[in-house]
Amino acid sequence: MDRRKFINLGGIGITSFTLSGFIPKNLVKKPIVISTWDAGIAANVGAWTILGAGGKAIDAVEKGVMVTEDEMNCCVGLNGNPDRDGHVTLDASIMDHEFNCGSVAFLERIKHPISVARRVMEKTPHVMLVGEGAQQFALEQGFKLESGELSKDAKNSYNNWLKKSEYKPVINIERKNAMSQLDANKMAPHRLSNGEWNHDTIGMIALDSFGNLSGSCTTSGAGFKMRGRVGDSPVIGAGLYVDNEVGAVVATGQGEDVIRVAGASAVVEQMRQGKTPTEACKIIVERINRIKKEKAKDIQICFIAVNKNGDFGSYSLHKGFNYAVHTKEGNKLYEAKSLD
Ligand code: GLY
Image 1 (cartoon, rainbow, N blue to C red):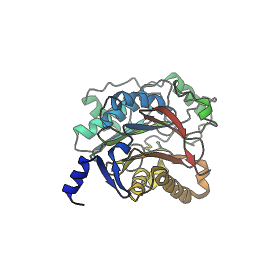
Image 2: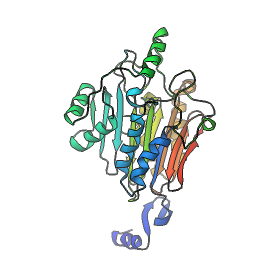
Image 3: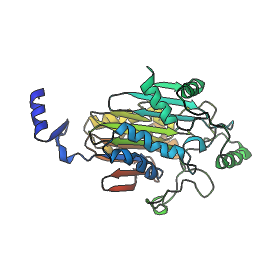
Image 4: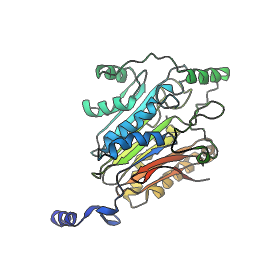
């Protein structure tokens, strides 16, 4: 197909070309924003203030997850579980429709790591800043240094953990019947009855009215982790990947096992080969399951994906993962399909 023919088709309402054919403009479901877990309901509302008004996906995915970073009743951000030395350390990444990306890892005492990641993307020639250097950069950019005191909830969790001090980093504890406990119109509860968070990460992907994709991911990482441990969330290609010709993917769950298979990028590549978002997520979840063998029962991994047409999907290793989808029709929580 030459360029002139493509432009002519654009004139009669054809907007994109995929392996499965041309997609008429009116069949592309946009805008749309999708985010992980029940916290995604409130985050989507934040993102929709931008997407619903015709704004850009990159602005929406930053604003959306900032809602979760701000929440005192959530595990993401400074209210998350600390590492085993009692410090909360944060990881975040962001990526736009032109392969621009930025991330921070092992960042302390800064409330909005996602916004620091965006500054890395926009104000530096680099992709990733970590630790003290990331904090120094954040302060230079005008971010406020928070006290470093653990929140009341995090202190309680930490004191509980100290009783045994078992090195078994906690990630993504599942709740049974998550859907039935939730009212999508209210702020969803994020703690288990034993006081633990049920997860620690929010990932968000969006397709805007211009047909552009972006994604973001922010986390306090595994609870009571080894000091300096970094998961998949700030690793572009693992926790998050966006290819504007194909789709966007974000991961949540056991970060080490997402990194091992370059998870988000691997899912995007499956969509490039013509797989639906759900099929693409499933193939990579199955790959992790094969690699982990019997140890797969001890971890959770979930991917959410959206393609260029606004089709979305998800797959997880085990039951209990949910994700929130906001379109013009409303904001809804879905239960992911899983291997068990
Ligand atoms: N997926 C979040 C982490 O492993 O840190």
